Length: 447
Image (cartoon, rainbow, N blue to C red):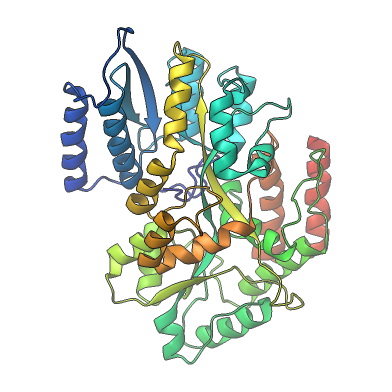
């Protein structure tokens, strides 16, 4: 899942224990993977090779990876894949950084956060994928030229394939709002009006994290910025502070009002997403800024007792409802590590992971979105989206997302914003405009 990240690669830091049945099922299939596969293709005389694939540690995604690896091994007797999940409880970028240093990387990994790719490339850890024309052609057909261009590194080469993207949206307690005679808000003014009605009943509107941890901004300031700026970049083409504009000031003012009026707690009341979801399900807060992974999480907590839905994050009052609302798209991408001894075989497997067959299984098993151009037109996907209307809302938002900026120091950029967020919005000690100016000055010094 594209959970809230762990530090830089997974902002929001949530750890998940595997339920016993999931563990049992996973172990059963892993044992099947180690047994001789029944090949559907006639084996040739080529010497079999083995490549290693590292997947996400989250149960649904690991289950999908097990299924697809098993299918691959059954149909490709000469290219065996050994699957391993990235350990839970450790930061993904730390695990991969350590593996690059020790030359113990996998051949393929599907849990790359775009910002960390720059660091891995600087360490010589990833292969440029442009040397695999068939893989690039498949990725271009699947996700489009613009997507591939957006993830190219400063040296002009592509080291990561866009794989999945979860748009960040506003989840609301529909039953609670209906009970109180309130409508889901579209604009800042509407949100603040709903917040006022909720506060009178001792209910928080929402709970943006009040700390200066940079990765928390992926779930408040950053998506709100893209919404306010109509998708305008956060950084310019040279890595400078494009966010030094009226949109950033409007976002900071909106957040400031939420804290000042008591619609959001100034204390860090909810230490993790599980606590936030419990508060949402029990009616203590009315809104969450989250992704589609939260659909099954809320259903797991509350079953069908909580009526909820999703809308775009709020926009300034001046924004026309006819214009689309942009948001942050939480990507995870696929890369091939330079330590591989089987480059061509790794590229074949990476192409399989972005195939239509793999993407259909991913959508069905994980309640998350493969980054495909035909997600809303291919009957295999539209049928699944109709079965899960919540997921369909996210799929329609996918056309208006922005990824993290393509800059190796982007975590520091969010760190500069976070300092001003605490000063201006949470504590109210500095004017929003000055906070944006100060953050921009700090980013300029980085560049």
